[in-house]
Length: 104
Image (tube, rainbow, N blue to C red; front, side, top):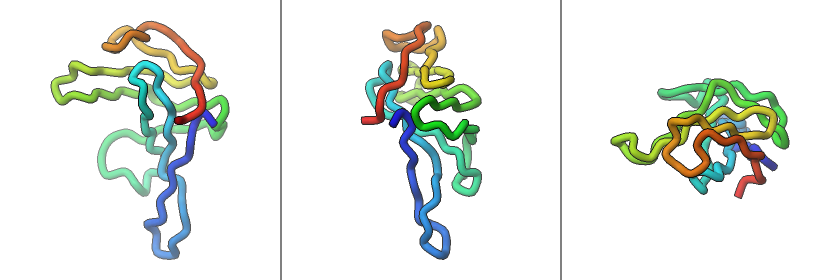
């Protein structure tokens, strides 16, 4: 599965709901989380998901940085099962498009 659902059981009847999805980023070599459920957003973006876990599309684009100074930056667009890295990424896959692999 290219987009793995992340569940939460925080509502009153303890029913699990999808909070967001994880994708594996081959540029950062780790998973990135995309929140889709507005009930679980405290701050930040909400992503729109096409519902296809094998060929996912999320909008808007994803911006992740792992250092507070912005020196490790991953900026991408996830469309039809591909992750398209923008030129402002700091990893080796900047300006490239690659097929997503199953979430690790």
